[in-house]
Amino acid sequence: MPRDRAIAIGLAVNELITNAVKHAFPDGREGVIEVRLSLSPDGWLLSVADDGAGMAGPRHAGLGSGLIEQFVRQAGGSLTIVDADGTTAAILLPKSAASPDRLTGEIQRKYRAPNMLVR
Image 1 (cartoon, rainbow, N blue to C red):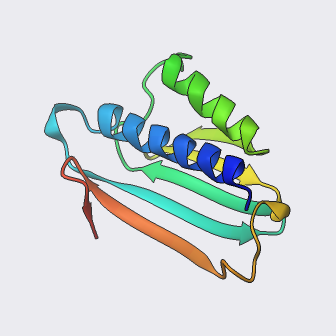
Image 2 (image 1 turned 45 degrees about the vertical axis):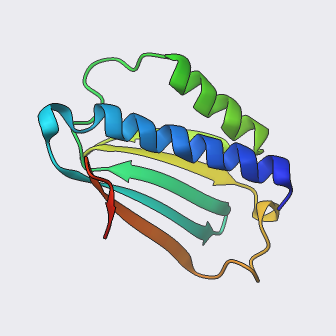
């Protein structure tokens, strides 16, 4: 994977996790943030999902949202946000984004909020 693409993906995921920590679990509520990478028929699917409060009301295009969209574009991907049982941000990257022989199956990590302990 080219370095520029890897950096853009890393920055997008970092911003998505930061947004989940800041907004998904108000008032100290506990929850889970899940980061998943899998190969789909359409390409690489990278998702950041939380089981938090969801996106109440209309979505505001703040600085963080703009950064995420720009990072995803830089990586050659597309972004979809789903607000159901928490929030899921799905980034679809072309199959050429990474070599399948180096990444096989599915990679998944779960984090507990607000302490962010790996489970």
